[in-house]
Image (tube, rainbow, N blue to C red; front, side, top):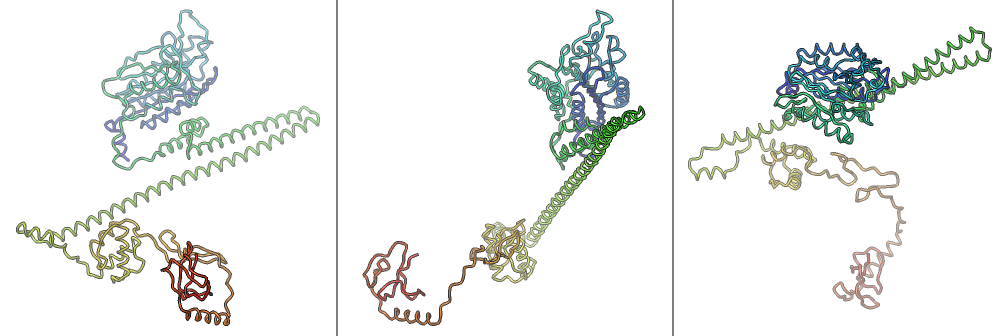
Length: 610
């Protein structure tokens, strides 16, 4: 694991990278924004995939909560090399200064911004201690409803449209706006804004310089908004490339499972246990096994919300019933209230049952997920064990080959001159140290393994063994002498990893994998010559003894009659005369037939037609 992390980080494996992500959607005094929470979840997932050490994702923060989050993040940036802040929500510019607006802001007057909002300079001070890179991404250039409703205390105080241009004073600092200074950004029609979608596509690309990545983001946003919104970047970096994710080196070991990242995000959403968390997860991973699990968790949350609503209605109905009784209401009104209370109680019970059902479904889905992960781990372990066994077999075969070569060199004499070398080169290889019986048994065992021999390996090189080696030569394309078992044939057999000869079964049997199983036909059917089940025909009447005696007499009479001349098989003659043999017919001697005479005139030949 440590080696894999070192490879993933490359030269900057010792860097510490931290990030703070804030998404404000649920504003209390102006209409709710649709995308910031989803955008924050998307960017948080991108930074997590990029390998950041710490990623703090916050949603719908008030003013005090935003200040606290910045204080805690400032403590993390003191020993960090890279610090990133992403903010999605409302922002505004007052007198040339930019402010981030919390969810509890009222901003009735223009001076309230100093107390109720956070200046962008406060964010820059928080990340100032980062050593190598300080990056602030603001998706806050939306059309601000506070600017339309707030009162001006001084007529000359300017409240701009969008955010104001800024030039960072610290080196290696970049500030990215979703839209150019003085213009507003679009939320788009999908779950995420065009700016956040483009960031997720380009920032995590390994080895891509940040300046180039933001250039690609600008191009994508311009195209998706019909060239109405242009992102802009302020600040500068040095001459070296500064990628957010280091370039990946060539893979030299086992690759990470792509499902691990989805599983980690799923477990993070499971810890949060909120509707927004699951919706953000589904926005990032809309399909697949974990998406189905997330949908089950959402169903469970919906069931809990339904149960809570039903319980609240039941409590209100009980209170109404008690009030009517206390005020001595009429009997009809009391009965009506009691019926409403009963209906509310029934609805609460139904909601409770539904919640239990959804809980059971979620638990079952979670168990299925764990079982699937265990099965995947088991399959990976089995695959690794198979690869290890294959490597050990290859090493064993290489060692045997090296041992044989060493023995050959030891037995071969040193050549004295060119003629001696030539004789030595043409001389046969040293004899095997195995006995004839052991060598024959080894070859028989290998022939059984590759499917060419069905009999037992007894060490006797008999006709069955010779036929098996002949089959191997046929299907493996070799030309070994089948009369004797040889070392060359043994080496060629060992080199084959699977079956070589096809499985041939006797009549009445069929191939099932590597075995022959007997063919079983249903009642009234039997196995024919083609190994297929055919219906048993009814038996013909058996000829009686008198019939056979008459047939023998007729046969003897025909055989004793002199044969008539005929034209070499092309002309058929009988008592009626001679004629050409009809198409599809042939002439046979009468002795080859078992039935009565087919021709006339007592001829010794007969015309047989198919």
